[in-house]
Image 1 (cartoon, helix red, strand yellow):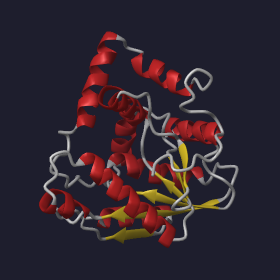
Image 2 (cartoon, rainbow, N blue to C red):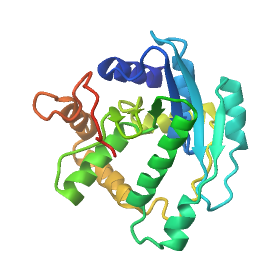
Image 3 (cartoon, helix red, strand yellow):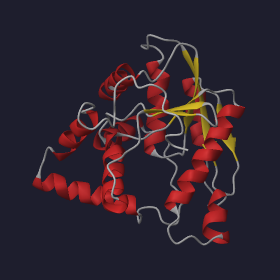
Image 4 (cartoon, helix red, strand yellow):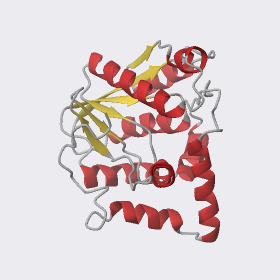
Length: 247
């Protein structure tokens, strides 16, 4: 857990993620990543140089029968308010529209609904559980499927919703998250998504694994490239607010 907190502190210092008085909403899907972020940010309040509040937000997908009561118990333990909002996003995508490539639309709809819920809960910051490997997989997706060098930024400002999106775990390796989540026995909720594990992102995950078999330090080198602001400008430190970068 110390490594996770250390990576979050480093990202916070590099990108100015959390400011004095921020009201931070943590998007909690029920997966290991979002639960780890919730747990870590609850602990980080003890060490942070600034004061901030936390709320945990969950969107149901309108499919499956996910039980979020164990997450409520965890939130009570962490002294973090927990809000669950019902949606029909999964039903719209898989039953009504029958999308063949659902991931992009699903992510857009979930992000919009989560942003709206965060504002309803009087939060000015939305924290998402993306980790180092997510950033690298997104880089590969954009390069190989869109022909551009791009990935999400650790901190982005959404002007239309007046909300700042942060990703405090961008320096945390996924394999370490898996280990710590098991050690802490976090109440992971199985994803109800019908295409879970069969997406283009899963292909990029497997491609990244194969790259690391040939070049063991590939992840570290790719992360270094993202942080090389002078050459690439993808992850400049302490950036000015980037309007519409994810809208």
